[in-house]
Length: 116
Length: 201
Image 1 (cartoon, rainbow over the protein chains, first blue to last red):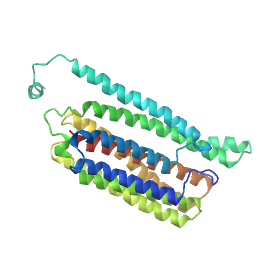
Image 2 (image 1 turned 30 degrees about the vertical axis):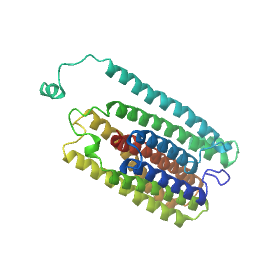
Image 3 (image 1 turned 90 degrees about the vertical axis):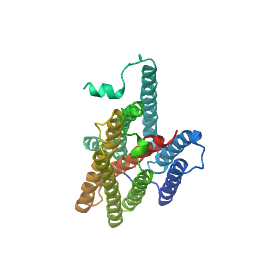
Image 4 (image 1 turned 120 degrees about the horizontal axis):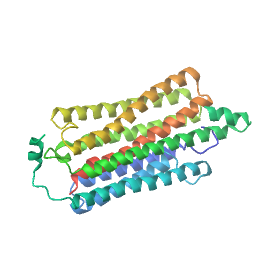
């Protein structure tokens, strides 16, 4: 990596990235391990915190952004994010539907395992 | 390497070849991202398929996972600090931070192997249920990546000692730095969707 690109950040950016990441991680674990957050809101909260931390690390550690030297990387990343969304959301959706529309089976798991 | 030679032939600035190598490596990382996306999708589909066996709630210990997470987070920071040393041309600072990063990564792997061994010992191995197969597949793949990162770290420490901080070594370090931070990104999704999600209603 040459010196004139901005791709290696500064001590300050690494430190702020680290502190933010630790704070977000502790918030995630705290939300699940303590009773501060109502149970029904926990999943939404940890997913939000996860996305926030992904952004923090992409910006502070991987130096992704709109800077000239990073534009190609950012564009490729945006395309990949779209593909990931299609793969993950599509799989969950299709398989959920398949499960819901499955014919009821008159056999329990234990019976099925006995048949092996 | 071949792109380096090609662009160097045009008498162009070193700026170009370095950034093109990292863009190429970034494309590899994104394809790796897709592998993990399919593993996450598989896990998402099979998360409830415990086949009468133990679920995540009985198996996972959150303080243990939090410790693993902190090791990996800290190693991301120490790697960054090392890269700053490399940018300043300070070889000893770089090597020191790389060694710390290596130890933190090793700690993570040791903890993960310990967790896997305990699970298998308790009869919750990958063959117990579809949920556990998906779990071992996903978390194990991440662990293998960290292990490869550790081997690569060792190789780079040797290269820095042997060749000094020349252009090629710097470029390889930049790729390894992307790789290492990328593993941290994947782990954020792992602890959220694999471990913490099990404890939400």
